[in-house]
Length: 305
Image (cartoon, rainbow, N blue to C red; front, side):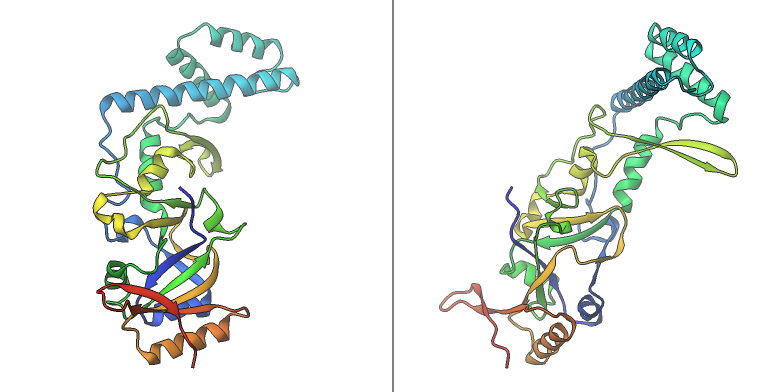
């Protein structure tokens, strides 16, 4: 899907909207605080899917160990207490065992040298849940002329729509951080074979700890965070996502302000002044008006008085 040149955020008038312009920051919400109760949901994990995920995790750990061990052997460097012939012998024995036994062998080596073992493979599922529920989401639309959007998100057309330009180098232009919402009535499927993982090693008072996490670019995670029921399709939504919720800088250049059909003249003047005082480049102003002889709306340039 081609990304629009400008994405819009509908807002009601008020203190928090004013702070967007004075502080030049936006608030990314956790999924649980959005208006769709199915946000970031996933189809129920089956026991078979969990088994496949655990198997994949163990195989990944074995492969990482073997590859890094071979590199250390080539450079004649110690690897978890093994070096030279001892390392070569261990890797050779490793290759003749079952995946389960290989995993046990490297886990024992890690424990002997670091006093820690790999995290429970089931933690990968927990990591996916944590990733989903901890993500920050900023919802935008590719249109600023949708009557339902004005009614639901902009104070019954008394607010405004903020247009952010999708310019090169911005978060909105980054495929990792800005994704189109996919509208479907089936929950994203948990596919253990596709679930990605990152291994992290940390050191604390209790010694070393090895944990595994689902990365931000995991396809299962991204499918969950960008899927909504078809009832919401009218929103034509795109999502700016970050690993954490809270305040973040603008994801793109602010280039447009569109005033709602019922936005008062006093509010229009207030926001024009806020923009002019806080931005040192031209921002274009528009207004929503009734289309002649219809019950539809259209957008036209707003004349600053």
